[in-house]
Image 1: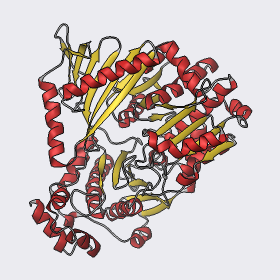
Image 2 (image 1 turned 30 degrees about the horizontal axis):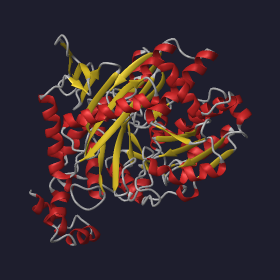
Image 3 (image 1 turned 135 degrees about the vertical axis):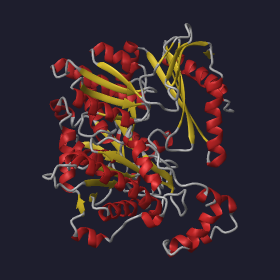
Image 4 (image 1 turned 60 degrees about the vertical axis):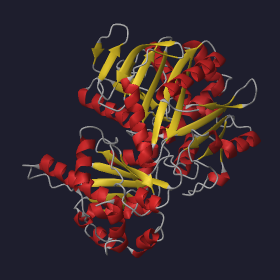
Length: 587
């Protein structure tokens, strides 16, 4: 059907509720909006769904959530039958864990998913109220589930929601299961194929179970196991001041609880942003990467003379940080690369000193994460493993380590403000990151310095690595085509230099080719195929282009190494301009 036929079907068919029909009928005359809502189905990508909330095939609503869940349920049942074939003793019921955040319709979408799973004979463990994404990752493994779902759109604006799928190892789905699940979702071509049942009937059948406190307790206990020096926290508990904001999301209760149980006494939560609110009324964009999200927190920090200022995104998997510069008294912003490196340095140095750093230790980072990680890993003699962008690939490495008995996971991070200390979860965890940074801050203060002072010490020791990101948003059909055209054009005209920096190596992850630009020799990337172009440059610099997998954006990453903060900032700006010029981006 064309978009007009789809629109009429939703407006008239008995399957859709009256509220949905009225929302759509009110659009009559707005052809652009009708086309955008119905020109395609909201795509179930390699991580799940994400889109604007509203009625229509290209929107997040109870019907698109049901459809996606039916496809996932079909795949789970196929996997279960295959796994249990010939095993008459295995009568265990297949189960799934489901969590949701503070966004609009999150509880409703989680309930729809749970009831659809139950109607397909799959037991759903659903959290009683909002929970952080990393706690869902933990719950999947703790409960022995085959899969998990989180209803969240992470740090997207308030009009968005999403649906992320996890597998039994607690990580987001990766190849080949991601493509297999997508295929099953795409086979659900008619709403008549979707099963559901009432919550009451699902509960009576033992297929719908509400969970909460017991998982919370176990999760927090696992977080606390990652503390290296509890005695330093106790010694500095009265001296270190922390300001924290959950940005109206899920982090408030678990973050405050773990800090309190560890003994931190001076923790101030931004009152205006403490309570969950899907409108995110105090911020234009609930993203700890955005300096505007810190306005209220920084105001409170100045009032209470805080040492560190922390913000988690709505589903509490990303962490933003400010820390005081002891020389100027100003609060300095950390990128995700910087905060990740501070945590990595603290863990590796302290564990090296107390003899708990494993001989086969490994640190994992994504291809667009700072090269300072490579230098730190070399110093502490841990294996540095590089993976594609997306924390699911870091979670996948933990699974490989356990299956193959190769390395012991020590730390993993990505540039987009996400990291994981420990293996209790298999996704980035802002709750454990808050805890680790607060411990690092306590340790630094016991040594007479701030976290910002520590960052400067690291620059002086390892080099002034600086990284940048430019995101270009191109919405709708035209935007999607423009992004494809930009990537195609860049592939067709491989560059020889950027900002006077010679290209040493060009990697096309989509074609699985790495080309040495001097010799012309090629080799495979060694990573799964992905629509990413990466250029290794001279002088420890690099740049990269990739379309976002979850938003209508193309992202441009870049990194340099300078002789000072000012020098690296200038080099970064020059490289940024050169990369955008090459991509044909104006401004």
